[in-house]
Image (cartoon, rainbow, N blue to C red; front, side):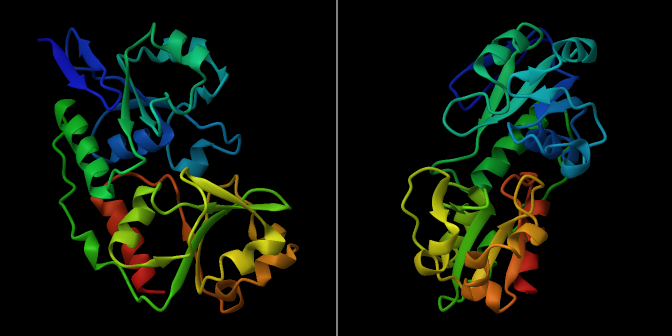
Length: 267
């Protein structure tokens, strides 16, 4: 029986039968696997620190960007490729590689940025997982109960380089937008995209946050490097020890979102 699904690039994906061997972008692979979808392998982002250990997947990693082992992709025999998209692109693969991978299997993209709420993104993955035959066991959770003390200023950031910090625009990232919608007071950013680039020595003045959500991915500067950057220690939240891990690319499930909210509540 033919199978079909309309993705968030307005592409109608159709196959002769329901896919059973999914190759996916790391975040999508984590999400689908946790929802009960068989995943045979995954590709990472252009962050070269991506690895199976860092994303918790005991699956073949085929590469990322331009550096994809296409022979490995072929050997995995995928019948569907699932990725996320921020603005219509096939995230995690260069355009040229995506075109070649599409010769092995159709590529389906779920949008996760812009005006999408976390709940709407989760529901899209639920719909896809259900369409792929999974018995989804991820009950909806009320995510509006996130801590919302309006007197606490919040910033989410990633350690980019020794000179620059990347401050997240909360309107762009579903998990941060969830907190903002629940009343969390993020320090204002000056970008419509995902990141505002700020010099470390200007960070405390531009983003004097009482609570810092810090990118826990391996490509972000670690504690040892941060300790050598004077601008980091000048942020009020850092001085007070109010620094919590934040994953910009978590599994897109209610269970993962609830864990994130509970972590904030227990700070």
